[in-house]
Image (cartoon, rainbow over all chains, first blue to last red; front, side, top):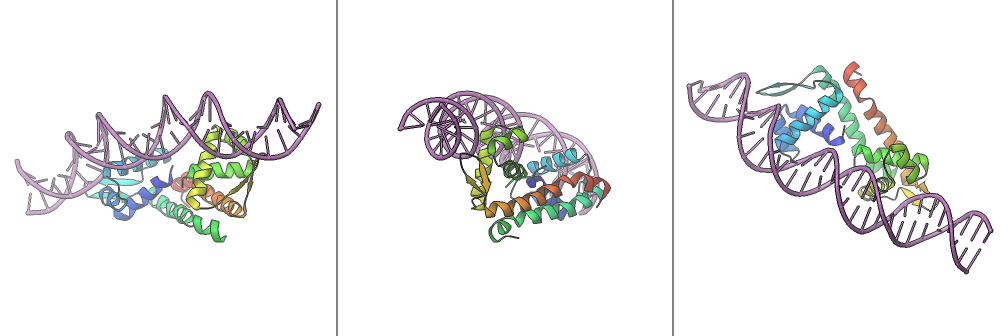
Length: 86
Length: 86
DNA sequence: GCGCTCCATACCCAATCGGTATTGGCGAGC
DNA sequence: GCTCGCCAATACCGATTGGGTATGGAGCGC
C-alpha cells in the first residue's frame, strides 16, 4: 500500500469515476484503474461497484475512505510538524 | 514522501544506526542512507546528526519520529478498518 | 442498431528502488 | 602517530515499479 494509492482511491471515491479522478490527479486513466485494482487486491476487498456510469463505493470502500482521509491529512501535516513542532 | 521512507526513518531512529536499521528492514545499507537523505531533502530539515558512531536524532527528527509513528500505526490498522469497520 | 462514454487490458518506455563495490572519515588501540 | 575497524556516503548497475498510448468490451441513450 502506498500513499499514492490512497490518494487515487480518495479521488475516485470523490468523483465517482476513474476518468474524472485521473484528470484531477493529472495522470491518465489506466494507471488509476491499476492502482485501485492493486489496492483492492492487497486488502482482499472490493472497494467499488463498477458500472458503465462510473464507480460507486461499497461498504468496505466507505470505511476505507474515512480512514484514508485520516492518513492523508496526517501526512499532509508532516512538514508543519517537523518545523514548528506539534 | 513515501511510507517506506517513514518506516526506514523510524528504524534508523530506533537503532541509532543506518547499518542496524538496514538489517532490521532486510535491505542493504545504501538504500537506507539514500531514503533518509531524500526525506531530509524533501522536508528541508536535518533529521539526524551523523558521526562515525552512528546517527542521533535532532529536535526536528524527534518531532518527525512521533508523527511518523502515528502515520504508520494508522496505516497498519487499515486492513482491520476495511474489514470490521471502525 | 448506432454511437457515446465508461472501465479494463496489452504493450512499451521512463523513473524509481535496491544491490554490489568502493571511498572517506573518525575513533580506538597498540 | 600510525594502523585497524566501523560507520555513513557515493558510484554504478540491474530489477522492479509506474505511467503513457492504443485498444477492447460493456452498457446506456437516442
